[in-house]
Length: 561
Image (cartoon, rainbow, N blue to C red; front, side):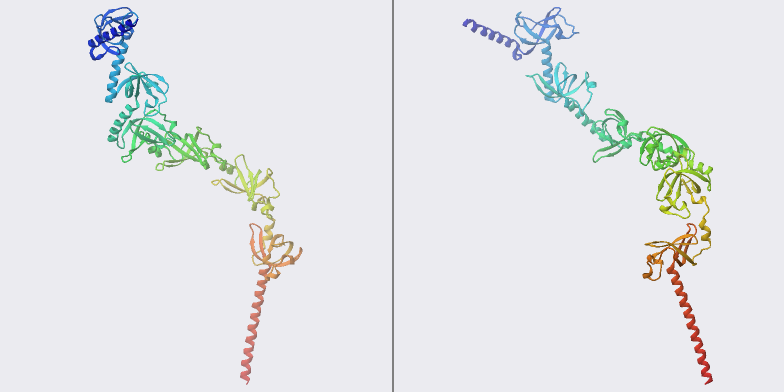
């Protein structure tokens, strides 16, 4: 048994030596050799590689449409010496792989690109067919930027760069990104050299932000600001653009120092504002769509790129101090009247209320000044009463127009919200949308006659009606008045209201007369000053007469002497 064991390896060594001698440095197992097809069966091709026995190769390894015939020369891979049937184990598929590996190694060493087809997905990346050799394409190496859908890249032949190879483990790692970066760098350099303001280019939307979109021009990015996307108002670039979309843009600014590129899309279209003055005439009515609502008004689109502002004050004749959103809504179609056009500032002022009759003018036409109306008190304020005249219009009664003999809080204390009252229209201002009313004008001014005979400087008798800290309330011919504390006397010590009592009759001087408001000003102090002045004048007159008489007597005595 020992002898047999010694003979077998010796025989094999001799056989291997003979093979090596025949095939030289190609070796035997693991080598690719040339063979000749000597016979074909339905399933196999019998190949002679010059050894003691032939080998067979399944026909499927030659491809489905391979046309084979006896005598054809083929390269095959020697897998091992003999199988169980005594035949040499050959492989056409492994021979082809070996050829591919050799070619790929050359490309790796030279840095040459290889063509491949992405055909599958694996964890962390994709599989690529490199003419029979399977390579791994990491997800990070698929493109320069993240790609959501790789489907368009699968099943097509495209260039790759081999990053590393391990023949023992059968591993090949490739990159598509490296190829793109190199191509991009070349395209970038070429583009920068030819780039100038006004150039029209095609690009791909790379990224979208709140303020615009970055466009890949092929190796270099440009910024397309939101205001340069369209002539019409755009709230966000995503309304008209999407990542991956191909767009045509114009270079509107190029800074060669920092290579910043500003792009525009609307510049490729005519500016609609150039003809706006001829198209939209002041006073004309047009239809538009509400595009945006703010606190100060609403923007109405008249056509693509042309918007006008309806200020909140121009929205309704009667609804004041309300948010524009309560009058109109976004996307609502409205009629507007052009109030002003300023093409230079790209502004159009519009009005909605001007498209309907002015209810103020209509009301005044039916109810002119002097008309007596009926209405309900809608609100009571510190300066008067607001009265509802119709569903849309209110009038105001000022405190001074409530009663002839009352004013201030005293004038409104007899009225309540919701009370029905009568009033007279005393003034109208349609432009300012104001209607002034009066209650006291419904009756004659009983105090007017009493006021008629009074004038400034008159001395009157006043009857004390009540005492207050700030003065004494009195009545003169039915007219209520007050003598203020400082006017009770010329002497400060006598300016105490408590020195008087109800029913006292005082003499005072009229210092002012306000017939419109039925008010008079009285002052005891002024009367005292006036009386004192008169006394001084009389005294001065008497002194002068006495002095003249003495001088005459003196002259007479001198003559007699």
